[in-house]
Image 1 (cartoon, helix red, strand yellow):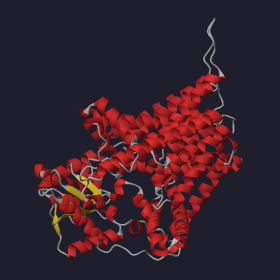
Image 2 (cartoon, rainbow, N blue to C red):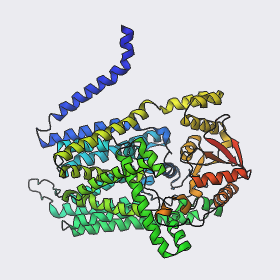
Image 3 (cartoon, one colour):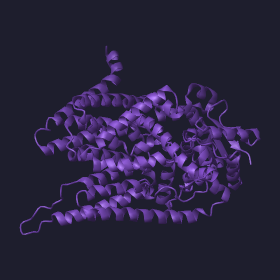
Image 4 (cartoon, helix red, strand yellow):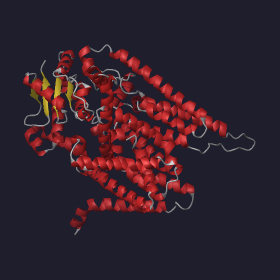
Length: 613
């Protein structure tokens, strides 16, 4: 009997913890109707409890580098903490951070200086968890009070935003959205706040009322708007959208402060990029060509320039229209993937065609229409509607497929818009809102459970380390991630001989490179933008493919290899995520006899090569 009870303990413990947590929440929720302060304190406690618990379930420091950009942010932050310079140590030749604004890595580097080198991983987890909790508190408590959300609407907001795995994945990784999102929400809340700050009168003292409070709020809004530009480039579009919100309330000085903050942020970012560009001019020409994607935004602008030089200005207009149509379709799919991450949505995003894609696009458009109707509400129009609309306009014409990550900064606006849109529909809208919450929590919850219960990273690393004695059996018993760990373990085992080497590959390259202690870059980044950006754009706008670069990626990769130190090697990792033009370039290199297969014996995929000079 005792054995049976002991076997049930792993199931009884989480059940008992869940019951105790539910009882505690019920006890706290009973105080809501007692007083207003009690209601807000209850919402604060519930939000912190749910968000902190999900952060603990989701965060995995072993996966730093899986976004690509996070490897650059983190390497620049560590460089600032150690050397006082924002250098991209994750890239070959360690160029200065020039493409991305300096605000986020600078803030992260200053926290690293405080934490010290030994506690950086823990500091990274704590800072990003605190930023995500702050974001949720601003949403649930700040916007809930400002917009007079009902109890079921606040619970729906907590369910839709708090359990969203896209929000968890982006904001718990070293990505700038983690800092940009709470800053944006604070600015939006401050621009629409009508409650005046007042210091209580003391006996015989002077109370500070409207004049000083408006001046302080204007200064804070200006600083926040400037910080938005310093953290993300898209802040140039989002921050000025806050100006009509304050002008609608007759606060001209606050509008001036916001515009001044945006201008100061643009000037500071421009000066920083100019200085970084001067430093990066010392890079060898082949290395600069291979790293051009990471050095400035002109790489993306080259898409329009290539079309214009090939077919004239009219082709640029047709290309922009085709790009907007393609981005709208992909954006609808991405919205569905962010709110309801069904497995079919992933297939639709990669395939971009077929019946499932059409169904998912229709669902995404319906969600956008529902959110748009809510954002047109008078309470949301100035707070989040105009910033969301300005950001959407940029995403439509940006020459890059708007994947789920692009929608994370817009997620609070979309969710609040959907809630207000359902409120306009009355009782059917309430039922639809609960159905949306149930579907969202079910799909996101399944991903959280799968991530937490199935793929234990430490166990995978331990299995990969023990399988080094028999790599064939270890890879055969493992998954694709286990094979990646085996490749990483092989690179790590090279020891001092691997230092200074470069790893070029697909989306896994920054992750594997960071684990192995190598510099890395995406192979796709050496393609020209008109080839990398999608075939789906060509045809949507009636354009022929511009003259491509057959052999150009090969020349860039070979040039980069020639500029490396004599003892350094350049590895190529084919992990199955390379785009078709890059696969063709690799085949061309292989046929020319320039690739030598290395790595773990018997592992067919992913494949690791060394580029022969």
